[in-house]
Image (tube, rainbow, N blue to C red; front, side):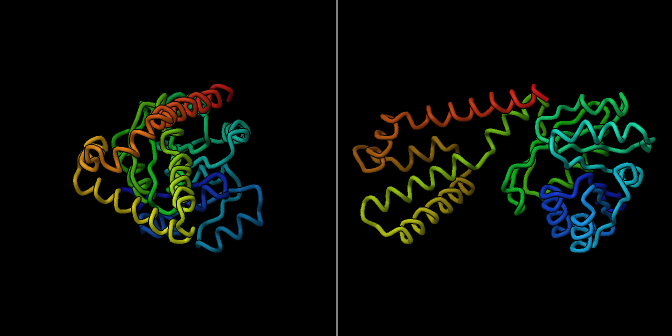
Length: 271
C-alpha cells in the first residue's frame, strides 16, 4: 500500500472530512493514527478525533507540518484565509495538497509555492457510502508516486477518473444524482397514478433500477443497445419510448447537464 506509512492531514473537521475518514478507515486504507485534523471549532475537533481515534493538530500550520498528504476540506469562502495562514509557515518538501473545496482552481494554491504539488478532487454525493465517483485533476508537479497515493485514497470512496481540470465542472453536473432521483420519483408516481399503492410501486421501481444496472454491468454494452434489445416493434416499451420522445426526455436531460455545467463554471470563475 502506497499510503501505509504516510501521514494524512485534514484542514477542516466538517462533514466532508468525516466522510473521508470514515471511508478510509473502514476500507483499512489508512489507520486512524495516521490521520491528524485541524479545525477552529475545538469542540467539533475533539468530538471527531475522539470518535475515530485521530490526532488533533494545534492549528492549520501544525497540520501541514505533520502531513504528507494535506486535504483542504473547507468552504470555498474560507480558502483564502487558510492559505494566508499557511503562507506563514514552511511547507515540508514533497507535501501534496489535495483540495476538495468546490470551485477553487489549482492555481489558487500557487501562493504557497510555484512548484507545490496540488490535486483538485471532486467526489460526488454517493461517495459518502463508498459508492461514488471522484474526478481528479493533477498539476504538473504531482509525481507518479504522488498520483498512486492519491488514487489509492480515493478508491475508498468508490471509483475515480483522472481529467484535465477544466472538465471538473462538467463532472459536477454529470455526477450529481439529483436528476436520477427525480426520474426514480417520477416512475413511482406513475405507478401510483395507474393504481398501484406507493409502497409496492417503490419496490417495483427500485428492483427494476437495480436489475437494469446489473444487466448493463454484465452485458457490457451501451445503453442504446439495451434499449433496442428491450423494445419490441409495436409493443409496450416502444409506446413508452415514443411518449418520452414526445416530451423531449433525452433533450431535457442533456440540457440539464449543460446548464449545470455552466452554473458550476460561473461559481468557479467567481472565486
